[in-house]
Image (cartoon, rainbow, N blue to C red; front, side, top):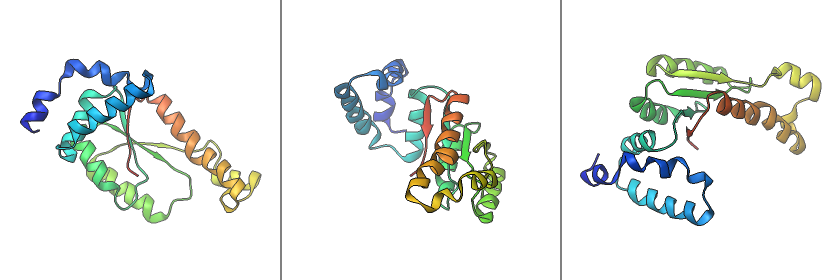
Length: 166
């Protein structure tokens, strides 16, 4: 970490980061400006370290395990090897994606947590048809297979800080 960052990062200041979402918009905007200025000169690894030290407890990392996922997984697990890594499994991933998940889980020793809909893909199709094929259906598909499982993960893991790529 740079000497400037070492001087600026103060663990005693953690409480202001822990409660930022409870503040008004102006306070949040000021916090974001301060955080951006503080983090701008840091490397990606230093930014992850800062977040783990200063943001709310119980961090998690979510991943779709796309081709570029290994970068974020590596960056974060280098700082906190046991961080929960959440995958929302729709049941419709390509076989190669599942193989990639297995490979990365083994190589990076990931603490993988898989969440999926309580209804299997076959059961969903039996009840609702192929939801992803219509504009109206895609909302229900996303709710069943992505939103609800992720909300459950956040709640069950009592997540305070969420690392994700986009």
